Length: 408
Ligand code: NAD
Ligand code: MG
Image 1 (cartoon, rainbow, N blue to C red):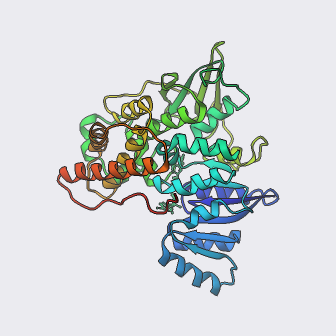
Image 2: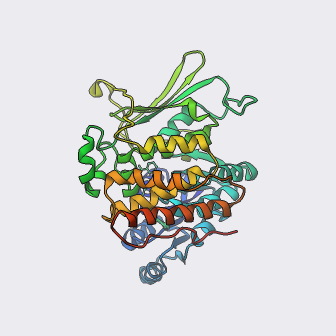
Image 3: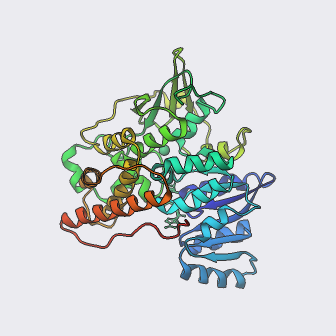
């Protein structure tokens, strides 16, 4: 019986994780849940899964939850504040941590799970993009097991398991390239002149996946693929030039690995995050996930196309950040989070998301990552600069600042 902590339990990945766990009460026990707020959903999760601990970063919501749970006789301890999530990730009775908080806010708890040597199921790609070398080093030092939840990286992991050794250059032996698939998002066919008037509701209406709002916007700009490009370099030790992005509208092939002998291995499945979640929970075993099995005859055909770099400039920005290394991915990620938040709040038009990111990247020098402080400083600076560019675009509002909840 494995103890599981789900950080970001009220989100889309959190829901899917609890769905898989509920199918296997003999294997998994929910020890801890964490999120920002969503009181009603949290109450329902606590009543159903009876975790020992829950943490809400919003103290008002935490106080309300305490009262409600006491009234309903649920003996769950409620923690509050930014550092509580990291505390849950390191609990001794937790074997598996699902890192499913969105954005840079997930970094402290993701790092805490890595440092505590847990099986770390990584959905929170932003923490890897912003602090890649630190997170990978923390995993190495503690002996934690890092398993990707992003469907593409989980597919690559299945086609390129850790048993494939690294060569003297650190690259996986025998691998020619990775084919990273992209659905193309909701605007795959939208003419560029219509990008200006795209609304948040349109951007969040993904054709194949039901996801949180931030990743949905990232999918619409193709920045999600850009973040995943950086993520793949860090997780699999491949060079940026070894990754090709392929638009595959059906989202059935979740990515592929090409070997030097000409073999191409692919992982296929319905577009449902419960497959990668079940895979990573049980790896190297296999467990059922509740996912609908593939009917290839019904699907009929699978298409593959090159991405359009003119209409989707965000992808090239991320590829440049991957090649530059150092703090460039941190800067890219922070500028993107600020720009996407502004778009979702109606302060920035969709077509300018990439413009803001490019301006921030061009205006900040690169640097190396030696400590967490380097990452946090670059993250904060990039958000400030993005804020200035967004203000410069004629619409003013204060931006959230990063950095809360981090431990030295
Ligand atoms: P979501 O918006 O549905 O859920 C986000 C969760 O994070 C919620 O529980 C929310 O309470 C919590 N959260 C947000 N801000 C927080 C903060 N400041 N402090 C503490 N908790 C906070 O997002 P999602 O779609 O579930 O995505 C979560 C992560 O998984 C993202 O990094 C995303 O890129 C990644 N991911 C998601 C999918 C998917 O299909 N949804 C696929 C691949 C990767
Ligand atoms: Mg993905």
